[in-house]
Image 1 (cartoon, helix red, strand yellow):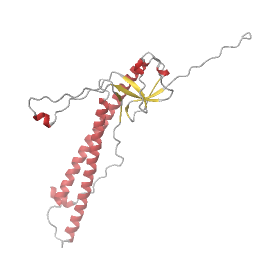
Image 2 (cartoon, one colour):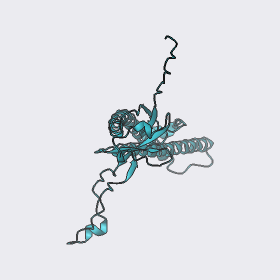
Image 3 (tube, one colour):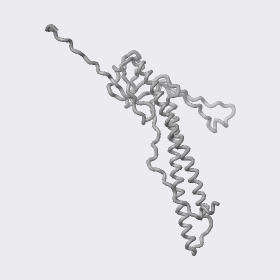
Image 4 (cartoon, helix red, strand yellow):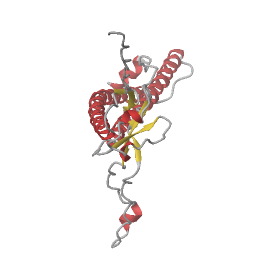
Length: 245
């Protein structure tokens, strides 16, 4: 080097950010924001749609299978409960110990069957709520055009205001952000109320359209799966089975 000192080497560290979107159980995606804001937001939008659609396909198949399974189990449980109850019809001779014991057994079986029906009805509500939450969550992405980012606490970053600015100058390394939709998603047509339907010659007042400036987080959450498995009811007493034949 002939006595001259080498120029210092400056290493540029890569900036990475975590971005949340879709269902709450989906892991945040990692992006390198070293590009202009418009490019980053477009990539985030396309990635959010793709990942959420893939999740929704699997979740819909899973939840739909559960809904059908619960419906079948509930139909069988109700039929079993009805059979047992038919066996409880009529009076029992209090002097007949065998008949009294048989009635007590049938009553206990009816109580167990009723408990199972109640548990399955609650499970049906959970599965239906999961299905509805999935439909509503996917609906947030319908016709998605413009997105932005906000901090987890809710503060908007408004990267769209300066689309040519390098996004890494705004975003913090290893920080987590949430994707927001710019503008509310389309709303389904509103069904007229009974009063409106009964009024002839009068058009219902039109509802305000979606707010084009609203920032809607593109996140949703399905209700959790039940923790405790459903127990099988006690065996039906022989008398109840015979009465069903």
